[in-house]
Image (cartoon, rainbow, N blue to C red; front, side, top):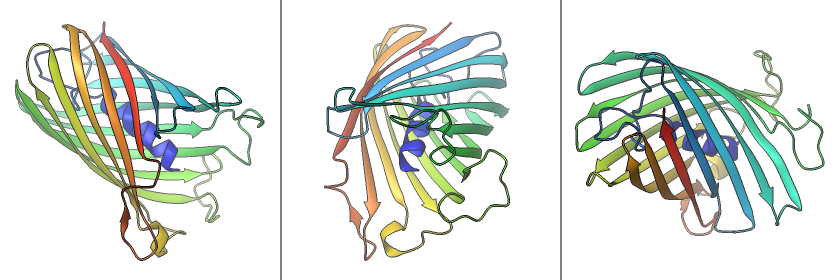
Length: 264
């Protein structure tokens, strides 16, 4: 569940931006203009273990200046390809309700299934594949030099795409996600982005060992030109242990990766 959420989170921040000096520079409120495509390719690891990597791709299109659609997927490997998987396949639709010069507000819906195919597991294996629906809102304030954004998502996960009534504690989960992100344009070439997200499963796992977890990201982006950038980032997961305290040192270490974004 956390792996799905983290992958989705990285895709959202990669594919979302606005009124910055660059058309595509990692801004957390990015929105493609009408008729524009965009692509975000990410290569990284959720942990400091360099034997585990995922290659992700988000590809989107601006239907209008206020409506965009995207699809995303990722492939993973572990222990130098002794284990590998097609991690996820998903799509989302974003509608920009408010599109003033500075203020932005989006409504978003998404669907995802993961894993599509896992090492030694069949395609869309019913015993392993999760299906996730997301409904959310995000918005913020944009200037030429900085952006401050926030978002909230309600996530429903189950073992079938339309199994709304299931209460199987092994599969059916309702999760709340709240997050903030900031983007600072330091120069025409360099910008940085930082984010923090909190996830809380609302049912089935409400003991002290699962009071929710934090996922954080820090990135540095270099603009190649007005429509392309490359970036490097660090990630960190902090999970609550028994007794309610946050484990900030031992769980997964620090993740890392790089990405390439283009608007065309």
